[in-house]
Length: 591
Image (cartoon, rainbow, N blue to C red; front, side):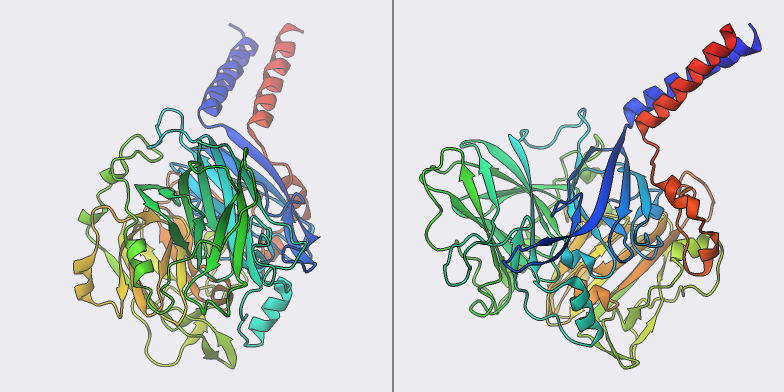
């Protein structure tokens, strides 16, 4: 056999191998053009962030282990990062889309995210993580479906419906930033949006005429999966559908024990899947409601989102008063008990065929403990700041992960305290030094007067306990060590604590933050740095070829990097490339 012929068959084998592997883990590509549009969701024209001219943005719909490429063109007048909230970015913290790992995408530039949704299922969302931009939009859904060989723990729904709820201000996000910079609170929101639209005119006094509202059309007798996300600024919302039960089935990538709720509190940054059967008569439409929680009802009455559920054979408009939320403004015990009732379905398979409960988190020895306490904002060096354990995080000009890659010194400190510091608060770039393959216990202590939700990138953590008062060593006696829900965002009630456990098996630099945008903007966050002492591509991929550089590494940024980053290599591109190689080899042999 000639060398040319041998080379040809080598290419054939490589191509076949690629095609087979690509069939197992296919590539899915999206193009995002992020820009401003003018919209009036509450009847007031304002600047809104849209993706591909849509608000909310398009839903990314993929399957477990798919490779995802999202080319982002930033047409805003400021820098941008897209964060894939709840997507674990296993082996690829480079793609997380927060300042600790990524340089921002400058205005008018392109950048392509490329990552694998490894060993995940569930309902998530993406959003812009910089400059309070989420308050102006830019968010959309992210669905990861089970592989066909792994069953879901319920009958396949007739349809899949994504619902975004969130408080909303008619001020531009730039004006909101200025208010926070000036030491002011954002104040009461102007309303609540459902899928980017204002409330149905259920009350002529509270809701002005001419506001566009969301209508969700369904078929009678069918069961739908509603994926509900609170994408707001800082308000906890109670979600309910008039006369319909919400059968909880999944939250942020974990199947739950299926329980019926008439309504459920959904806190900022949280996501839930409900199975809703359309079993009512079609004499009229029905209200879908998202209303503010733990507030003065009379003063906050206008901060209510109302959409319409319409059966295809409906005979009239929705009518009557809105279905009420739980009446516990001054006693949040009901809400906490509801949160405690959400349990992990230990017999259901998740992304893999083995049951979720086969990971027995309750029997693992804790290796490190952090008590993270937040409280009311306070002044540091004359500026109003928010803190975690007395530290207000300062984002470095060079991302932490990039500084590690290039062995830069002085970018951050690995001195985040295991307990709240005594004495005056301080502002610094202080992060947690996590132990690779360690098992961390984190107690989130909320000494603020408002609800907070905490999110940790890179992981699903186990919510093992929550209660009022101050956490103590004795509190561990109340932990749920069997079927506590695994999720990415947990609420912490004011004057209360929430305990989470997390297995540090994902190498990278991972953001740990409040999801309340105002407090996050003011510094209520840190990072957990997890490093494998053995340098290997098995636990973390190399720095991407299209990495952006900033801060102390700005000189490494080349203009042509951006044009090349605008064209992601997807599965079809690679297949065409290998086909071209085969054809070229064939021509070479038989010339």
